[in-house]
Image (tube, rainbow over all chains, first blue to last red; front, top):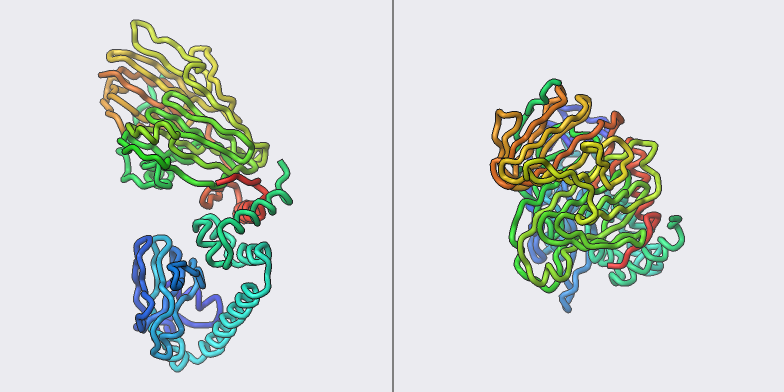
Amino acid sequence: MISQFKNYLKEKIQITDEQFDSISADLKIKKFDKNEIIQYTGDISKHGFFVCKGLLRAYSIDSKGKEHILQFAPENWLISDRNNMNNEPSIFFIEAIEATEVVVMPNDFMEQAAVKVPCLQPMHTRLLSNSIRFMQKRINMLLSATAEERYLDFIKLYPNLTLRVPQWMIASYLGITPESLSRVRKELANKHFRP
Amino acid sequence: MEKKQIGKVLKAPAPHMVGDGFRVHNFFPSGYKIDMSPFFLMDYGSKIEFSARKEPRGVGIHPHRGFETVTIAYHGAVAHHDSSGNSGIIYPGDVQWMTAASGILHKEYHEQRYSIQGGPFQMVQLWVNLPAKFKMSKPKYQAIKQAEMANFVLPENGGKIEIIAGNFHNIKGNASTFTPIEMYNARLNKGGKADFTFPASFNTGFMIIEGSINVNGKETVHADNFIYFEDEGTEIHIEALEDSIILILSGEPIDEPIAQYGPFLMNTEAEINEAISDYNQGKFGYLEE
C-alpha cells in the first residue's frame, strides 16, 4: 500500500526508490472499517491521510445537529484538518464512508521530506496551490452558483461518487437540500433522457 | 454420450448485505474465480427470517448498463420499480428478467405486505452479460409468473422442471435471451430423477436451493452449495435424496473483454467512463425515491 503513495509521487516528480525509502520511515498504513470515525473535532491530530483504497469524508456538525461535508477523499486524495498544523483543534470529523486503507503521514511530512529530497519542494508548493484553488472554487460555488451548477461541477470533480455515496451526502457537500438535488437530477434527466 | 463431471462443489461464501434487505452470498465473481460466462455474477440469498417491519427493507435507486439482471424468488416477495416505467412484485416461484442494456435505474424493496408480516426470505440474483452488439439495446422487462411458467412433468411422480429460459425436452422456456442460455428450476420429489444434456462448450452450474441430490450416481450435494461442472462431457444425471429445488444454469460463454465498475458491465474502460458520465447527466432517466 505504501507503494501506491510512491506511485502517486512518481506520477508527479522524478523520485527514485532510494529517495522514497529515505523519507518513508515516518509513514504508516492503517485500515478503517466502514463508518469508523478516524478523527474527531477538538482533536489535535499530528497526522494527515493519503487514501490508497476506500473513501473518507471531512465534515462538521452545526449547532442544530446538521452535518456539512467539506471534502470527500477517494483513492489518491490527501485529507487532513489544516488547523492541526497550527496546533489548533480540528474543526472537522474525518470518517470512513467505505472500508478504507490509508497512508498516515505526520503533518509536517512534506516539509521534512523536501529537506531530504529537494525535488519534493516544487511539488509540495503545487499541491498546496491546487488545494487553495480547489477551496477558492468551492467557496465561489457555495456563494454564487445554482444547485445545478454545483452538481455539474461535483460530477466533474468526483465522477464515480454518485455511485458510492448516498444522495444526502452529496446534497450536504453541495450545500443544498436533498430535495433540491433530486429536482436537479430530475431536470437533467428531462433534458438528456432519450428513451 | 459422455458424462459431464463435477468440477468443484462450492460452499456458500460469507454473506454480505446489499442495502438492508438482501443478505447474499456472492458465489462469483468475488466468492470464487470460476468462469460461468455468460453469467457474470450470482448472489445467493440463503434462507433467513426477516422480522416484521413497517418500512420495507431493500436497495434504493441504482443504475445498471450492459447486462441483464435475473431475480428468482423462493421465499418472501420483492417489489420492483424502474425508470422505464415498469414495476411488479416477484413472489416465490416467479422470475424477473430485466434487460438493463443501454441503461436503467431501478429500486428493489421487500414487498409491503411481506415486510409487515416478516418471514422466510430466499432469492437468487444473476447478472447475465450481454454481447457487445446488444449492450446498448433498448431496456426490456420480462415478468414470469410461476403459474405461467413452461414446465416438464417428470415421470413416476418425480417432480417437475420449470423452464425459465432455453429448451428442455422440446419445451421452450418463457424468457427470451440474447445468447443461448438454459435456465431451469428443477423441483424434484424425493427419489425424483432427471437427466440434462448441455453442449460441452457451455459453462454449467447447479445451485442447490433446497434438499440434497446425488449427481451422476457419484457425489451427494446439499442445499446452499453450488456445483461447478467441468467443460468436458454433456450428460448430467441427478436424483433427489429428499424433496429438492435446484437452479440449473448453463450458457454459451461470451468471448469478449470485460470491464466492470460497480453496476456497469461493459467491454472497455472508456465505455465504463461513458456509463458513469451518462448516469450522472441523467441519461438513464429518473425514478422517484
